[in-house]
Image (cartoon, one colour):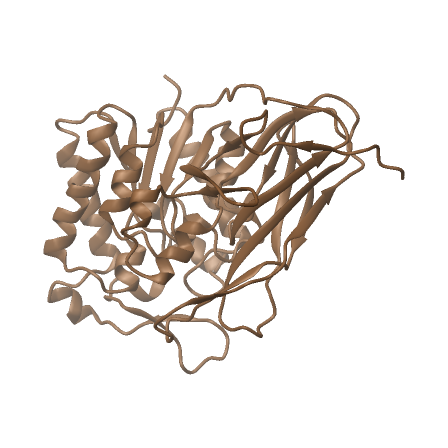
Length: 390
């Protein structure tokens, strides 16, 4: 098929809107959407968090066009364990008038070489890639290009075979969500399969994701980011990463939760605020963390190095976390009627684990992500929920 001469569409200062980003940096070659602002990035404590916050979960380009052919040139950066390991594919999704119509995968890009055993990560330069979406309907349409949750994505160029206009104004309420890898995505097959994105698409909410894989640990820099980000609805999913890493004892957890919520409330004093406790994770339901990989298995399988006795000594299990979060929210609600609590077991509980086990005993696959999205939409956005339309 012959493609009409392509138009170069500016990625900054033009009709394209970058949604779901906290900040957008200009680079020598293009623009780089960020999920953390510059001041907060200066306080990142380690390379793992640096990689996690750089990934593009929930970020998308929005515009309106009658284009039948769209090309997006990107330079991705992928976290990977070595300079020679195969590069994982990352999926870009094209959404037209609210429906996913095409997806394209890319294995190209820079390598951010990192393992937990190596103290210092380093960057190996790679090549850009161009994603082509073609044979689209030749009619005016609302277009969103969703970036992969797995990669940092520097946007180098956008080309179309028809003029581009600014997108229609977002009609949904803005939803700011923070959580762990379970919210970030991790082993989901693509960005549309992650439960926050699936929920947003089902409910019409405009999502900004500050879900940071492995780094939902009540960091003040995250709380300040949420404080300063406009939002109509806010949710925070707290607990699994703190137990994973055995990072806090009960005494500190209590005040850290209050401090995190206080900071968010400094910027959003009356916004609906939902605190969500962890979904079911068998190894640490009653025993403490840290979670580790089972040395008896070759495939990823999570177990815990902690015990029930450790919990009695002040360490945290998910059961303890849920009880504390429920108590904290109940007490705060006496002065803050806009705060609510959701037990994570309502999204995925022990009975669900029997029917839909987690592939690595920790992270949801696409089936559980879809279940969580459906239940969150019903319980939170539905009648009587924390985010129900009033």
